[in-house]
Image 1 (cartoon, rainbow, N blue to C red):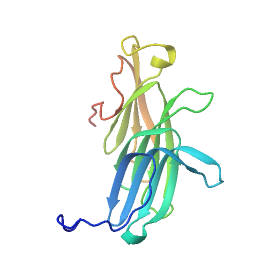
Image 2 (spheres, one colour):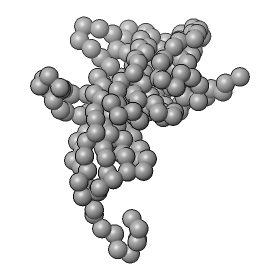
Image 3 (cartoon, rainbow, N blue to C red):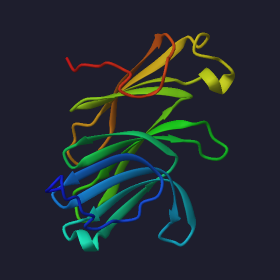
Image 4 (cartoon, one colour):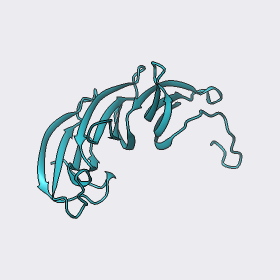
Length: 193
């Protein structure tokens, strides 16, 4: 929009799913979508989430530069440098649900999934800082018929994200008395130091 009195559509790219994040850096757009349906590289159908990078330098001819599919439902993201960290609720067949933290390199030409870190949970709250992602999770809770008032132990994990290459490393965890109210990004306060 260079003139608010004369708005024009210069181009578009079809994206389906629930929008979670949209990042623009110059003419490069990175979109994160949940509830996305598509086809994997091997031709099999896929339903989950996607991180898609688009070249919009020529708005009349927007090109897909790359996709990184993610299992489950992305509930939030955090960007630090070249890395996008996606918080993904994953329920794989025959297993307990997890909160999966996935680091995705969104700048390199090959745009790639770098690392995953799984937190067993029924509910989880996440806080992200420049050096860490802190996750408070209720590992039993709804899985065992407990509600927020009767679940009595939380697990708090400190996941180091200081590596600029996107490696995720758990540095420590602790069990504390308490229960969760709410879920998602930003409902947990944490300060380094």
